[in-house]
Length: 236
Image (cartoon, rainbow, N blue to C red; front, side, top):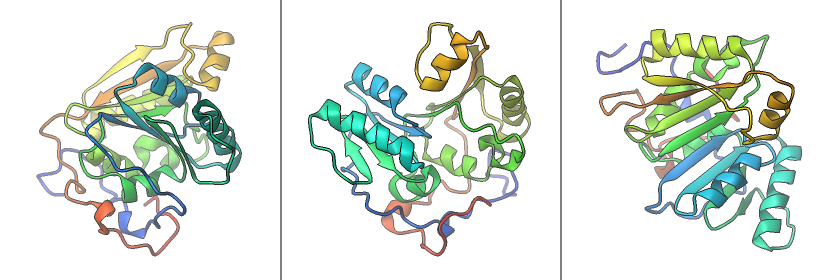
C-alpha cells in the first residue's frame, strides 16, 4: 500500500464497477454545508435534521422501495406537492433519493464535498461481517468524500457492533473519534425510539477526518464521468 495512504485497509473499492442510479436528477450542489445520510429509512431523522438546520443541505439515500415510498410521501406532504412516482423527492434543503448509497456517492458526490455523514442503526449483518460498514472497501471511498474535519456518525444498539467498529478505527482506519452513549430521550429514528423505549443502551461513534488524511480516491470524481457503468454494484 502506498505510503501516502493514511489507513491500513488493503482491499480497494471498485468504484468503476458501479452503475449510475437511474431516474435521479439532483439539484446542483451549492455553498451550503452538505450532509449525507445512508439508509434513511422512512426519513424521520432526515426530516428532523432539515427542519432544525435550514442553513444546511441533506441528501438522504434509501435503497428499499417500501421505506423510500414512505419517506418520499412524507417529504412531498411537507412540501405540499402531489404524490408522484419518482426516484427523488425534495424540500428546499433536503433531497430524498431512492438509490443504493454507494452507487449514489460514486456518481453524485465530488471529493471532499461532505460536511458530515449519518449512518444510523444500520443492518448489523450478523452473519457477514464483510458487509458491515467499516469492514467494507467503500468506507475508504466515503472518507474521501468528506471535507477535512467532517464527521461520520455511526449509531447502533448492538454493543458488539460498536466495539468492532471502534477496534477498526483504532487498528485499521486510524481515525480520531468520540464514543458516546445516546440519551434516553433521543428520537432521531424509528429504530432509536423503539430501542430506547425497551431500555436498551444505544451508542454512537463520531469519527473525524483529519486534514492530513489521504485515501486512494482523493482525486476520483465520478460526477465528471470518471466511473464506468459495467455492473450494478461492487462491494469489493
